[in-house]
Image 1: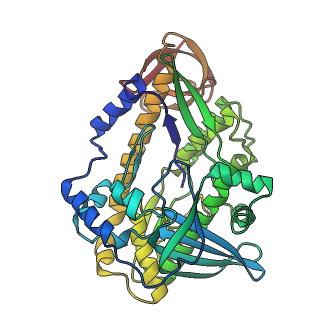
Image 2 (image 1 turned 180 degrees about the vertical axis):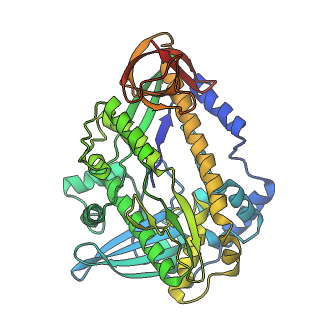
Image 3 (image 1 turned 60 degrees about the vertical axis):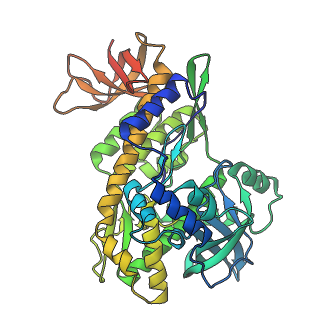
Length: 478
C-alpha cells in the first residue's frame, strides 16, 4: 500500500540534507551492515539455491522508477482464450537467506527498507537487493512465479505458484511505458498492461476498494531557499499496482484455503480520522459533499493539481491502522480483509524491501504443493506481527520526521509571516493546542494559543518557528 514519496535534491552539505543526515543518526539507522552479514551475502550471492523449473524462456520485463535497482517483480502478460494470463515473478529472497543466519537475523532487526527523501536504508545488503537477488535484465534469477488466469472481465479463474528460474528481458520505467501505450506503439505483452489494469480498476470500484494515486513531492533548493513541487503518477503506475494487488489477493485466498498464513488487514477508518480528513479537504478548498463517499472523492481527484496532491498525501493517514494478522491450523481470524482493498490481502510482492513477504511466499508455495510450511516459517510466524508492527512504526517515525524537516525547510525564511489556515485537529486535553492546515503553501503544523481553538474553522495564524535542524514548525493565532 502507498506511502508518501518525498525527494530532496541539493548538495549533501545543504541545510536540509544535513538535517536528514542528523535524523538518521538520531534514530540509529544506517545503511552499513555488520561484517558477518556482508560475508554471508557474498557467499550466498555466489551460490544461491536454484529451482529446477526453468521459465527463462518467458520474456519477462520489470517496471520501476528509472533509477531503481532493487527489482522485486517482473511481469509477462498474454491472452488466454477469451481472458488473460498474468505471470508475476517475485524475487526469491529465501534462495539467498539461510534461516537463523546472520542475514536473517539482520533482516529481522531491520524489518523494512527505510525511505528518506535523500537516501534509502535497505533491508538487505545491496550485493543482494540490487545485485544477485534483484530481477535485473539479462540475468537468470531464482523467483517465486505466480501464474494467474483471468476471465474476460479480469476476474481470477485459476492460480498457480511455484519456484522458477526466470530472466527479465527489459528494465522499463513508467514514463517510457506510458509514452508507448499512449502513442499506440506498445506491443503485447506491454499493451495488455492497460487492458488488464483497467479491468482490475473497474473490479476495484465494484467491490468498494480504493487505490491512492500518491504524487511524489520534490523539494528543490535554489539559492538557499526551497520550493515544493509535485509529480503526479502516470496511469501506468496504477495499472502496475493493480497487478501487485491481484497477486496479494491471490496469496491471501490461497492461505485462507490452506488454513495457515499471515494477512495484511485494515479495519474501517474510525469516524474521528475521517472527520479530520474532511476538515483537511475543507481547508484545501476541496468540495466533499456528505453524500459522496471517501472512495468516490479520491477517484475524482486530479493528482496534477497541487491542492489535490496535498490532500492525497494526507489520505495516507487512514492507512495507519493496518496490521499483520497470523492464523494457523484452520482457525480463521475475525478480520480477514483490508478495508482499502475491500478483500483479503497479503503482502508478498516486495521481499527485497519487506520482511513479511518472504514468509508469505513460503506459505503460499507450501499451500500450492499441498504441504505444510517449512518449520522455520512456523517457528517465526506468531512473533512476526509484532516484529512487523515495530518496523512499521519505525518507518512511520521516519516519514513523519522527514515531513516535519521538509516543511520546516520550506518555511524557514518566513518566520513572523501570517497565513490563512484551518484548524483540523484539537488536543482534547489541551484545547488551546492543535494542528492547522495552511491554505498555501499546503503545510500542516502545530498551533499553540491561549484560548480554545475553533475546530474546523478558518483561522489567521503567525509562523513562530521553522527550524529544519529541530524538525519543528510552530504557529500561533495571529
